[in-house]
Image (tube, rainbow, N blue to C red; front, side, top):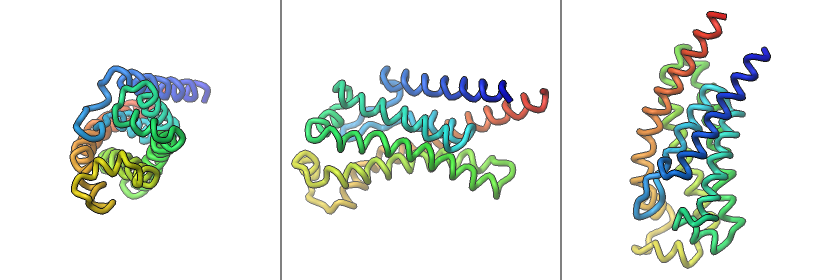
Length: 203
């Protein structure tokens, strides 16, 4: 039991370290003309599937904090603009949303695992859902907090409604994030879970 707790803490620590490293080396983001396409959802999804909703929430929190610090340090031009408008609302957009993503990803995987005992489908569906949730929650809270600001309205060149703006603004981002998280997150989580089961059986 003690060894399992140590293993769990080690795995969680490694995934948090990966999130921090890829967040601040630029490996975790693909910069576009609009928002950043984030690959940090991949370790969040992996942790949520391998260790459960609680670990997913912790990893999502780590993701959110690094995202907010990107705004503070000016590493994200878009985030820096939001921070200049309202720091507290920017924190809400970045941090609680990502913690919720990790927690919900863990719950989704557990729910699918009850139906699909092999869990194969669950790994890839959860990976896909993690990226989708990240896009939906981030964009939803962003528009709720900043839709009426001059900055966001200046990006709304066509003067479209809020829904059309959201689809246009994150369409490419979501289209790239979801397959990446689905394939990478699903494959790695499946491999780690299999290795974990084999280790338990050997013990």
